[in-house]
Length: 276
Ligand SMILES: [Zn+2]
Image 1: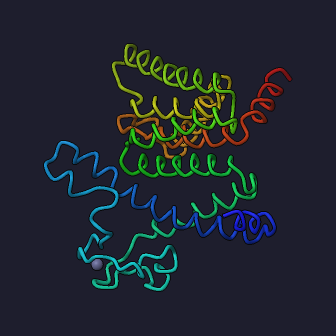
Image 2 (image 1 turned 135 degrees about the vertical axis):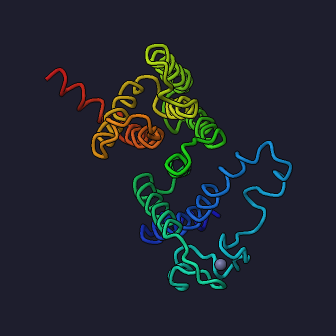
């Protein structure tokens, strides 16, 4: 193990290449999570809930139900070799799978370059990949699974205790204040308009990000998320027909990434801009 760490430290190329390969494999797992977790949540009250989880049954083609061989399940390579089609029934495989693998690989390369071989690399990689999974699931299903929100929250608190991120008291107050800030917004909105503008998953996601950025950066997080959401709503002309809800989780997640990695700099630029 020590020899491997030494090798990583000696060769930046080898380190980043390894980050990329690990990222591809984790991306492959994220695909599994994004596909199966919403089904598992929908099945929760079902009798056959034990017959379907993250590791069971093995991966299979959704069109012909044929089990996918391990050799056909290699990130990106298998998709390219099979030319994007199932080996048994020739139905097209969604390009979402290799795309998510590629995005995860690139995320780990950037974080690997930024943090090098270190403990923060592990923590920040995990946080970014959980946020990626939350974005995908929320876009597709309007759902932010508790399992992922809580993982991000516990990881944020652990990072603060391990001196990887912010002070532990800032992280704890950040998580509580994060939850309460959206919870109060939700009830204010509901009392005034009698509509539900946000979901409980959104509160938990802000709480989880609060444990990474502390209470101090929560106003900035909500501001960036609101601006991003507004730009998106205007861009797709959704403001007029507001009956159709927009998933807000992805905007919170992107704002969270910005605050986790560059919160202090953004806050400084923002206050400079306001004060002049
Ligand atoms: Zn098939």
